[in-house]
Image 1 (tube, rainbow, N blue to C red):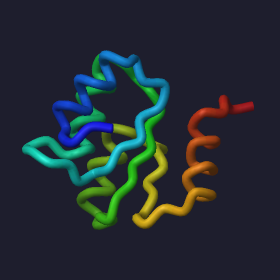
Image 2: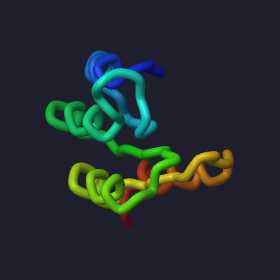
Image 3: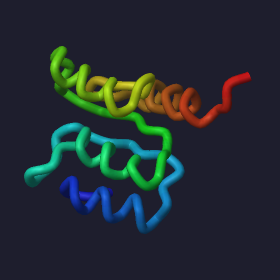
Image 4: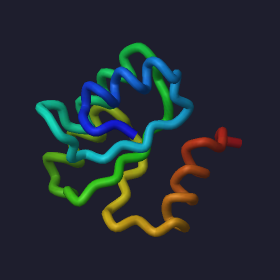
Length: 93
């Protein structure tokens, strides 16, 4: 877990994340979308976005940096989260 975008970028790069579970709304100047963009520049990893924001502008920004990434609306049930993780971590047949 990271409280802000820069911390998320630093932690993901240090830990070599296998999966990024990212909230859109983070403390500081960098939102979750920008944090994922920066992480993916050096270390591509599957990503799942969790957000309370589903406006067209936000969704468009997500699709530009992570096409096909699941976008889950808050609050997220455990079953929905499990299904999303399974979908991004299971290689296509």
